Length: 250
Image 1 (tube, rainbow, N blue to C red):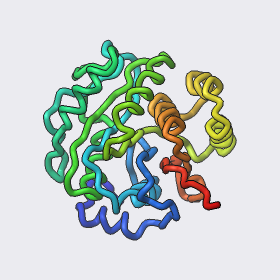
Image 2: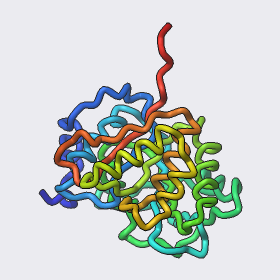
Image 3: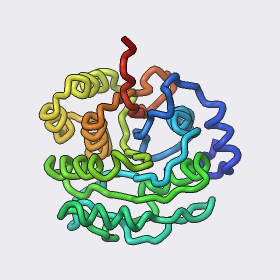
């Protein structure tokens, strides 16, 4: 299957027919998805997007890690629109400027922009799931844990009360269950320092670890549960989502 040649209708059908997760989907506000999409992970991706397909969002914020360093550590391309084979998606310029106003390391800058960005792999799926939305693209261009915390803090402040979906692009390999269990343990037990150390170490195999970590920090701040789709046997990269914890009935 050539995912890049699928029509919107075909993508919609794949999402519709994907495995259903009992997520209380109206509470899902974050997705963890692979940087690249192919036949090897498209099924898992559709299952992930199915958790939000019946919602409507005003804005989608796509977070990805830039390989290497950017002079502007948290960079947002200056595009007014992003164009895919399904048409144009407008940029939420107001929100983009709010990021710049909130903290010193956010900049509108094209240093890391290219058509190879993970943003362009996700937009056709987003366009197939949602009919009317704006987007903000953000690249993490530094490895300093302080930058990750700054990003997480700003996402928390600006998006908690907005009708926005956050998409974190990161490759969590399914071939290493021990690594996933280590990640899960660090996340579940709120071991922030251990997670930071792990994601900055040479032993990790997660690609896009900075985006992954920022998502974990925001989910924790919002009181959201992070769920990994590691039960899907065919997965090469593990997708995930974060949903609001439901209050327990007395």
